[in-house]
Length: 362
Image (cartoon, rainbow, N blue to C red):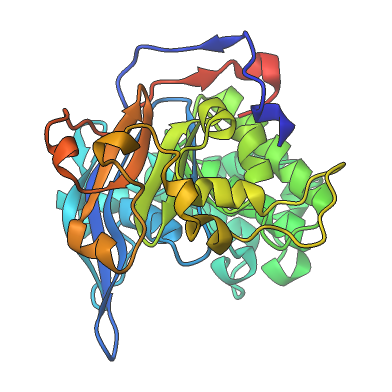
């Protein structure tokens, strides 16, 4: 994670129009006992060619956020209660299923977490890639075949023409993941949603997949929403980081500010729980140890004015949640207080990118 610890000199800030803006998104699911909120008031912004990392532990709402962008939430039991998702000035939540079919795969593509279950086992790899191409591009079967072959070759699959006839079970885990990437990128999307694309892969294959995504993003000028719980991957690849817990944003900043000056106790807890070379410990610090330490809550700028980090449960729920710009371009989820009522409310919006061709990162 050292890559994000020292802010390099070759950083650029671009003045451009956001590619996608999510505002106050709330998604819940009906269970046998009650309604559970998976995402509760999430807002984020992604600019062209930018990589935003959505970080948090399992169950915090990362994947639900990505699935909501493509309207892939089963309703019922799911319910998108409120919010907007503007993509190229169009609110995706107001589009019909027929209209969304033109967006999925063409403008926004997704790499799902489990390639073995995401690929249909009874169709060949080629049939599945070609289907997406024919759906979104005005080409015939022969042209679609050539596009599919190129897509397979672009992701590093040898003998692409022959491999199109293979079934998913004939590919290794890394090859299936490459096939998923080829399928997602065959139609040149503007935004790629990558849901833990290196899960269950060994370290060497993981590095290859990440390098492949970096290369393809540079070549195609894509924006990427990278969903992960691995802070090492975030440090090396993200421009902007959105930390989630219990369906809400607890911290939002560019990658250098977040790693150098984490403000929310939960974020500091995540960093403290990671083993470090040269700093042996008998026991690692847990997230609970940090967030349950009253001293950690007093470290937040503005604490003297009554500003405290938000944390679910107890008094926090009665006081409410506010996503507050605690410092310029650095947002923290806070408990509601009178002082925040007097502050100007801003949505998280960071037009920031590393120079990818200099750093070799996303």
